Length: 383
Ligand code: AMP
Image 1 (cartoon, rainbow, N blue to C red):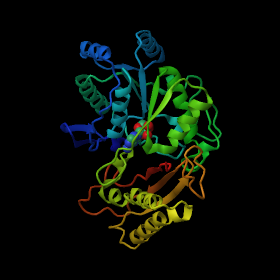
Image 2: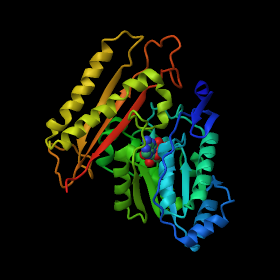
Image 3: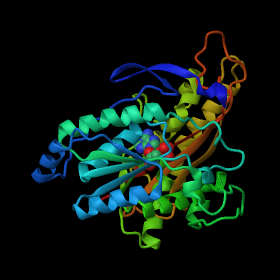
Image 4: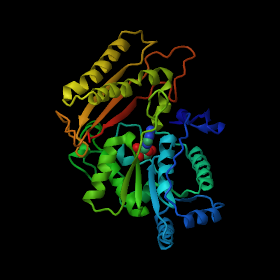
């Protein structure tokens, strides 16, 4: 893991800064604001206050209770850190709809399988705090809700009884959403949604948020969270923010730092394939085969094209799935019910580079870390 933690110099919209494992991000302004004049005045008075960082449950609970007694509202944005504009857009949305935003930064071990990238997952605490502080100042001057708390617990705090177990079945107290959590991402990563549902249940219990914010980028996760809130009668509202992308369509992800230029270019195959399928739906096609064939054909062509190149030029990848699924169950559909719409989603595994070329930009990890890319497009119901 040590070589992965080297410092990189990168550019963000505020100029150059040196930070571990960062990559360029875009800032997108959000316009909606629900704050009353009274709240706005209140925040003008308190704008000098800085975000408080909590590591333990009790002080955060006390803080939350005081906010409740002051009739303030809390929007929770759970993250694993390594923040980028996708995360920040959720914070902006939460700040537009609540007086206070809590951001959690916790790399949850139980959602990583035993052979997955827990150890190498990027950790960029200082850069994350700098981004949140900059954003908080922007929110203060806009009169929006503030990033009032960051919760960064230890694993002992989050899993107080047993050390967390990522094996199957795994000893411990877990929340499982079946079969939803076993499909698609869950089929490839069998403990993933158990870990996600469990940690979110814990975070919701600790933070008691009025609203929770999740990105459409991880669409199945949003469906799991909605189900968790519904089935366990959790007293919070689930809000979903749009996927933030780079200009060429690549969805932002904390793991993109591992791609490097060659794999990043070829990795566009996923968003391109999904857009081809979306175009079929927009053209009036409703049957599975009619919608998905151009997406599958595009991916197959690119697999063949890459396989045919020399090892020093190619970036090989495997398509894990291209899915057309029901929006509430994530079960595959044969035909889209246009009163319900559907979810087009996919996952692609970018394999490690076989032969790096001289002077090539390889990304963090020298192009050797497998990168799983996820993306999706919601096919809206037809009115
Ligand atoms: P993570 O830190 O990857 O667990 O993500 C934390 C939250 O940020 C999740 O709700 C993600 O869906 C959301 N998120 C991650 N990437 C993006 C993106 N590109 N656009 C919007 N939301 C995102």
